Length: 125
Image (cartoon, rainbow, N blue to C red; front, side, top):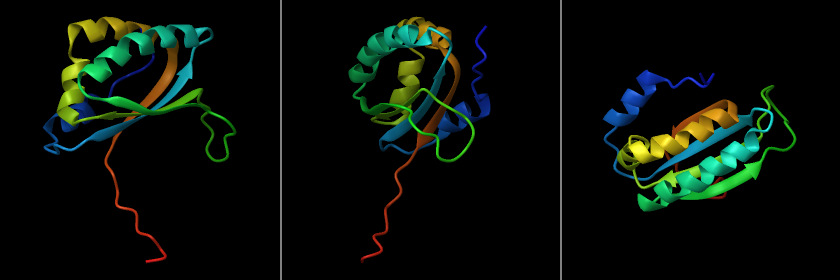
């Protein structure tokens, strides 16, 4: 059993959200010892599902110096999906769910946030 617990109430909110625009998912990942290899297997398989629905990885980085906070992470990743509904369709695909087992094996803990763009206000006008 994985220690990663989904927030069912937030998944229901995600499914009810009527926004049709793109959504960027913030992933914070902490691996179990040796979990990076399992995550690489997951990423390879899941990458096909992401691409098939029109999504793309915007950024994948190894976490560096922790300047604020107290939770250390191994990877930070931003993945853009064409919509929340596209993401939900992907995560309910039985073939995707098979590959997701490698993510559960790999991660000690994880954070997944659905984000919406905020218009930046340029202080220079």
